[in-house]
Image (cartoon, rainbow, N blue to C red; front, side, top):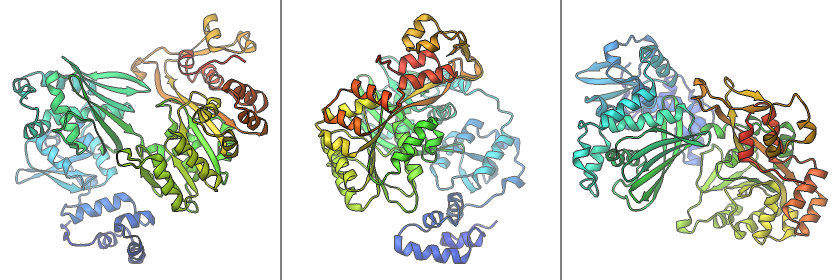
Length: 581
């Protein structure tokens, strides 16, 4: 197909390609005049086309040819010019060579950094051609079937490679690199450095890791990923590789690569194969060099509702009733990494309808959600949760989500918002739902304000899920029964069994695959309100809620999951507390 004139408008291209009609384009242009937004985003928001259609049209507009991969037969020698793991990471497929330049079909034609990286890896000029996500993925599967290398083997071979003199990193030493931005940039663009970083991202995504850690020590450099809450090492390159690898990450997220004395924070959006991930990158100057932690943010969290989180039907009904009230506060509590933000996003997914205005204030904004107004807290310039919340109240919202209530000022404004007709969702760091009330009292929130505004509290934990292929149901020991706090009527049942982890190839011999949530739900009634006005302790609140409101504790919910074989007794004991009445 002939290359399009770069001046041709995106809307006209989409009409010519039959994606939208001229009438739809006219309607979108009218809305664009009101919103001032880009025409592509307007068309997607009006559901006249998909984001992929706009990306493809932009690629054509930039001068790239369109290719139909379903009609191309690709030479095997051409395929071998780009390793399968590299092609998968960048979601590309080589299709031909023209005048010494390698032409690759790509699903993201706007990301020109891909072409630069591939040029560094292959050592020749690389040009792009426009395709679509499905065709590129299908072509990769069809043409790279001969590659059966295990990613661990590839990382091991790279570890051997970087220990040799091929990169000349050992000879250069670290002194020459410090303060020399040109050297850092050049090293970060080395093909081997690019490949190592790409493979680490690929490994993390394939194993559904939540974090990637680059850690620099006196004589070592270690790369670890966090899977199901636990860290595991994937490779330990030579210490001399720490600076170029960390510089590579900094370049990817537009950090200052010469700044190694101060912490830096940034975000990047990365396409790994056919998966788009958001990554929050944080650097920390340590005693023997910089350390980097990359939090992988799961975009699927913004597309799921509460029903997909594993919440029991009983608690789900209560949550649904609370969040659909016209006003009030609902809090989600638990330690860091317990899934509080995911639960809040699940609530927002259920509440996000065209007839309501939802505004969030977060630190940081974990995931970008369509049709929601999201505000990033920046305490360095005075934009705190409290100041941002004051401004939000002047924006006529129906529902407000506050990333975290950290102080009395934020709590008071949240309460004021709930009392003036807004539904407020937020998080608080406490170990259980009843302790949330005592935490608010400790923050000097007046008891009558708590009873007037607080509608519900969810406490939660994440526990590792037993591998289906190797889990075992065993008779619990007397010690386990005592530690778990299993009710006497259950303990006396000869059929009682609890889950136990073993380990097999399917779970990398960890015994667990994935995590499941357990939840504790507390709502207020008149009797509980009286206890709060009396400044009752968490123990008294818990005992009242269990006796009069049927509340089940986190430990009780966890025991049920253990008896069902979802998790193990070890996980229950580790992540929940047992309370004696």
